[in-house]
Image (cartoon, rainbow, N blue to C red; front, side):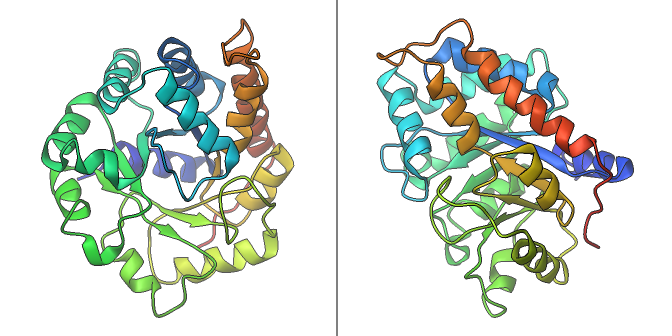
Length: 279
């Protein structure tokens, strides 16, 4: 089965450039603003959209994304509202791949079977669930794959040659390479080390490899893209959104454009030079 994610990476490969993968948190700072931003992202240049599922204890995320989850939860965001948001997005966009990213607890209590069914109905294409290891694939990964969702796994600088096959075994859509050891948004990636790591991963899989954590500028994105199939930008977008809010975390007239202007710059940076994906 060919998914939207597969089609998007194939189309970008034909164009000779890497994918721009954007991350924002569903419901941040409120439902209406988050939906408006979601609808605006493809036009600004996002090739693939990751939406964070708000959670009270996002342990892999840095302060910016943790705070975005808190703002969303405070505004009343729930998993059902997140899926409703995706259904509304799909009314006007049937092509842009959309991935839900987050933690297992909100899925477990949904519960799993109902969550997967509702994801398919809403138009979700894939899942990134950072705290479910390969040893627990029967819990979520296998049922998601059988239902037609891509299940995207993270590889990190500490994923050694012995561990990597387990990480890749049931991964589909793409591999998300975490460019730094640590939490999101706290350090800049070393381009040379990232390119070497991506090359090692691609020796063991034909899946595209997208690189995230720490990418903030068009220049960084362009440098990373020279040795990867995609670049993920999250904390920089969340920070731009936060900077547009007032002291009570209410959005202003420029909240959506503060994010889309940054996305547009990142997209132009990737498009301005021919990027060669690692074979």
